[in-house]
Image 1 (cartoon, helix red, strand yellow):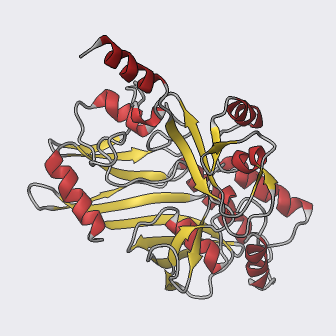
Image 2 (cartoon, rainbow, N blue to C red):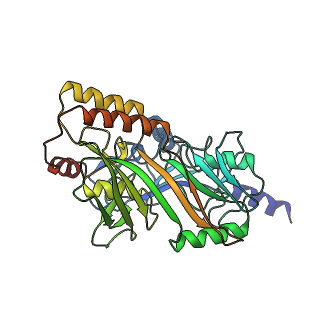
Image 3 (tube, rainbow, N blue to C red):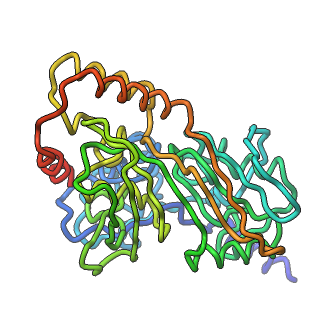
Length: 363
């Protein structure tokens, strides 16, 4: 190779930019400064960092760099381009404790604590379950298009607690991925939702896709014109007059499926800030009751959702395996609080239409 060619290739490499974020602006978007627009769509982003990126020419709209005062328009294609590759491609091993409830030469079943992000991504490059897996296990396999997520065949949200199965071999990865794709795994969740459900058991069906206005949310599209087919079966376990404990069985496994489906039903999960469950949606707003609810929010500072059971066929033996995770302490705490409050107070007389109205206001 000639010296000139080496210099040329080095210059090309030096000038290369990597896409860290991209989005196409929705048709209904009103004119808004791009720094404000991006702040609510990139986790942990600050206005100062976005403005600095714009000043450095790293924010492109329709392939042209823009300043932070540029006003986004419907249909704009926005990219954040940086000189370094996305950090989520660099998984760093970290000595983070994880609760292993089963392990053999093919799989590991983990009981995830609430608050732990499953895999690295924007704003969460360390402290994730994948960082812990990298430390505790050698050479976990990855799906071909997800090299930064070794061992993962499914996930649960950061603030959801409960069970995950991790593949230790390529054989296990293939087998488990096929089982999840074919919906032959068994997954039961416990969720505390606002209000009293009209039926003791039922099925929520509706395509789930990105919310048309808030890209951090998922939304339900009943006609199926957008999103992916999603089915959640539920059964009431205990009614506390203002909130209800339900058991959910997933037939499909879409992002935020239970959270989005129950908001669509008019019963957001208790303390689910993303879907509006972090405010009083059932009952009065008198001081004593409000203080009680606020205390429950503080005792369980997350959506009250727990992945309780997991069943799958072992990748090599074919044996059906079932695992169960006990209810975590924060959910046990608030359930006992609601149980006592419901037993010692006059039951709510307000119709659940109040919840429906509040849910519509959140759209």
